[in-house]
Amino acid sequence: MTDAWRADRGRRGRGFTVLTPANRYASRLPNVRDGLVFKLVTPRLAPARLGVSLLAFAPGGGTTAPFAAGLEDFLYVLRGAVVLGDGAEMPAGGWCYLPPGVGFGVRAAESGPAEVLWVKRRYEPWPGLGAPQRADGHRDDQPWQDTGVAGFRRRELLDPLDARHDFNMSLLAFEPGTGLDKIEIHDEEHGLYMTAGGGTYHLDGEDLPVRQDDFIYMAPYCPQSFLAGDEPSEYLLYKDVFRDGF
Image 1 (tube, rainbow, N blue to C red):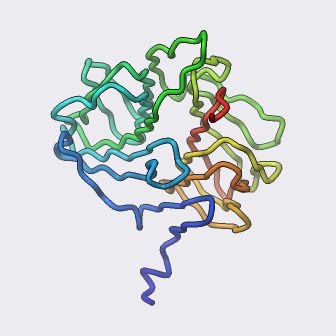
Image 2: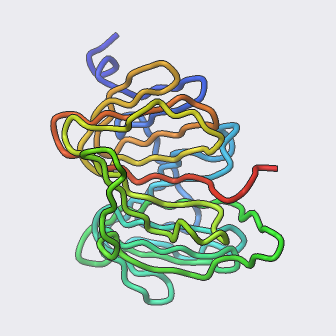
């Protein structure tokens, strides 16, 4: 086995998948010009009920036709800047939630390349609650909140108390050498993108190294925990909420 293969940290476990920049595979879609689509997870990976893709655009690249309405979407700009089809500008750290009745187009600014994390899923209605409205923001709009664990803070992008939402998007930040205070096992699934730093992720009995730009899918009931390494670390976390899964 070559050193290049030994160096790759990608891993498929019983209840999780770790994708690194070294082993994710570039795809294309008919309406994406001057850009690549890295499908990090889709419902093909049972039991996942969401899709997460990384859209990587060259300067000025983007969609030639909108993505159709029907699913709810969440966009987060990792690098560069983009403009949505309705003219809304999103710099790095900007985000947008689009309810299921809204399609969208997106293109990178002419000034440079851009990378956008795209989360999509089929909305789960709840009797008496309508679908959420469109929402836009930036990661710096909300302050960091203490969690009760020293060195661990979080920042909510979507309102975590709005029961119309069937998922949350959260930024979790860790000082060097700190992490979650237990191994969690729960019904909610996760899609996790490392936005800074790195450390060790405990997944179903394995302790695996993770770094910036890694992606982890965690299935329901996958034992999980995180410990930051020797630098500040952060990840963007998807979690389904307010629904019972039936």
